[in-house]
Image 1 (cartoon, rainbow, N blue to C red):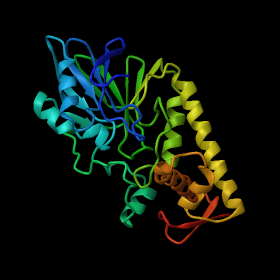
Image 2: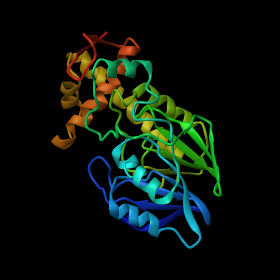
Image 3: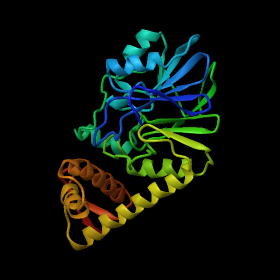
Image 4: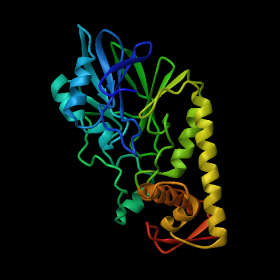
Length: 296
């Protein structure tokens, strides 16, 4: 995958990789042009980077224009370029809502108590021009794109479906598992949405990061199995000794770089919040990053 070059990844779909590789983004963020000729839908403008803006505009062929913009979720690597690109193209921005939209009551309560994200780059200033709901269609020269509200990675996260192709954003990625970081990430919602997407037989998935996924159902199965295995590890660790999310992450994630331990701790916290809601673990006090948990 090469940044800045438009690559045809499906009939009527071009991918432009943003120049923002990192341990959290893999090779970088994928932007997609959907449609061919006339007005196009751009999915996930990407980071606020002049090089990426130029690459997107250069990908347009004569007679093409960006007629609409959709944003899967309000992380800076997906949404930050949206205002500039909207001004440049005149296209309205479609999304589920602002960064805090779509949170479950449990996650909204955590946020109300002052719990903040773990530094994953929330775009707090993001505001769409048009809000969309689950099942809604975004219609244009490209035909119809169906919106699925798929919270889990973020409460405001949406996926799109077009011509049998799933665009799952960061819910299902091609290079790694998704980060689920409360109060934006919600493990219960994440697992529910994976099972929802698995129930459909999509021909192809084009994720927010990483290469195209040619067997979406198998990939989703693998992600579900991974999370169930991680949940079992959390419960097993608590069977031996109580601890905070970070203490448990240190005991469970024994083979990752130290720089990734904070993200791993957030994933463990997401599991703990879900397990506490299911009455499988007990929190000693109000839930937060430093809360001590014990096995019930």
